[in-house]
Image (tube, rainbow, N blue to C red; front, top):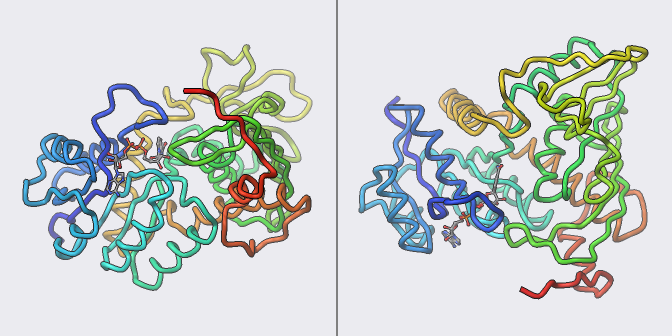
Length: 364
Ligand SMILES: NC(=O)c1ccc[n+]([C@@H]2O[C@H](COP(=O)([O-])OP(=O)(O)OC[C@H]3O[C@@H](n4cnc5c(N)ncnc54)[C@H](O)[C@@H]3O)[C@@H](O)[C@H]2O)c1
């Protein structure tokens, strides 16, 4: 097999400072592809901002003939693309991924979160499956040592029978998509049976253009009876760790908030009755990296070459996305939501449109 032909939609500008108004995630994808040396070749890219497209092309050695400002034109003109990386804001993910599937790209590696409605998330998955395009999402954290080691410990029974997975973060949609994906990963990729939640949205919070709640309490049950729980926003401290796995015989914390854990490894565990925590060496890896995107993309490319989807497949991402939208739907309907989730829209947006939520817009 020759070098795989990779294209990009949304290059970003070279980020001077990371932030929710432009990380230039495409650059991180490109560095990961380049690390695979001769296995892949970046042959084309499209960005509506010409200078972003041109500077990305120069940085990654893409020929001028492969530079576009219209992604649909790129998909029409570039023959047989193996992989398309999509690194635009969430509202564009579904139309772009669907266009890639309709152009019969071999695989798509799209940034998280999946989409801005549950209907779009389902459609992009279904149309990709129908067209034979392997759709993936960049939930790269599961490739980190703290999470890999925690999963291994759970599988080996270190904390007895897994009973609960928990996490904390700022919101369930933007950051939470990673965290729910990690909970699903720790529990063996199973889906949920039901979700119950309450949210508060009093101050407008737009992350990459998408509304995110200020505070949430969410509980869900997996098909194997393991429970999931999160508190986001001001209540997040209660859980005490970035991610947590609670078993019949002990507990594992990833990214503990405990000041005593500062300067120690981000992974620790103890069995019930033991006072002291045991810290596990993660060789300098935190909850965020380094090297996670490189590993995730290397694995995705290796799976693609074998004709397979990787563990970052849209089937797995959809399970996390279902919990997110079910949580917003539960808040909207004041009831537990039994899955599969039978809605199309975005319940948080629905509540704003109905005037039931009136998030205060801070003056710029
Ligand atoms: N996986 C992670 O840990 C992680 C971290 C940060 C951001 N993200 C996600 O990455 C995504 C992209 O964020 P970013 O900060 O890289 O964005 P960015 O603003 O840096 O880049 C987006 C690019 O898309 C281009 N664009 C917009 N409309 C387009 C169109 N119609 N056609 C072609 N190009 C178009 C813009 O011009 C811009 O260059 C978001 O969904 C965000 O949630 C993921």
